[in-house]
Amino acid sequence: MQKIRESSDRVLGFGCWAIAGEWWDTAGQPLGWGRTDDEESVRAVRRALDLGVTFFDTADVYGAGHGERLLGRALGRRRAEVRVATKWGNLFDERTRTLTGADDTPEYARRALTASLTRLGTDHVDLYQLHLGDVDPRRAAELRDACEEFVKEGLVRAYGWSTDDPGRAAVFAAGRHCAAVQYRANVLQDAPEMHALCETADLVGVIRSPLAMGLLTGGHGGGRTPAAGDIRSAPPAWLPGFGDGGGADPEWLARVEALREVLTSDGRTLTQGALAWLWARGPRTVPIPGFRSVAQAEENAGAMAKGPLGEAQTAEVERILGR
Figure (cartoon, rainbow, N blue to C red):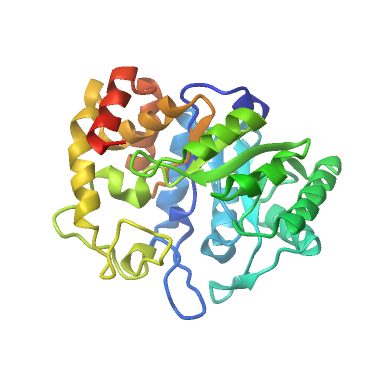
């Protein structure tokens, strides 16, 4: 994680939730992004590599293990060229692709790490992240200490926590080899306290949902609804911007349209403008947009050539949103 930690104004990672395929909770609610084409996903990962993307974020629970296996296959002999991040804390059944619970014990953290290394086909993880955002801080301190042991053993290079709570993230940040915190942020949902924590605690901000679950790609207007098997078709309470029927919330779409002109300035696509806003938000932000095709990988990676939005553009965004 060292090069990422040293920061740049246009470091980009790719999030691998969307390519992991379908999986569900025990009630049958979808937790993936619908059906995927593994061969296209592999091509997309390799195209991203060719375009200079060298950071990939996944989790053991994505696709109930399938996401890690797919990423390991796609990277193949090029594993040494990249930094791989994964997460632990959820329990799942690989056979039925079902989320079955959670385990926040240090003992499970070790078992989960061993299983992830096997699925990824690697001998170490560059960034190992706790995937349970609301773990008690006292237990989190135990997990932080377990991660320090993993670092000593060479199984993990650095670790972090996927949480939107700056107080909890600070518990992990106290560890010597804590390098990052993963949190939700995008032009529609800023996270100023988390950005500030990264500055004060010398952390990389790994930005999940940088495209607001696809709303900032511009592909959810016109009454389009996600297919069955896509988490957005039956959005849980923590997923704003989509209605119970799966269609995008008209108020959210209106905000996207209001921002379109400024985000697409200087020849950017809407997607690239959304990523550019995050880079302008601070030099420690590393967006990890999802992707499911070679075309999406190319569009995401193309944002790096454009860089962050300028001061006048970011000020206009704030004016439009009334912040």
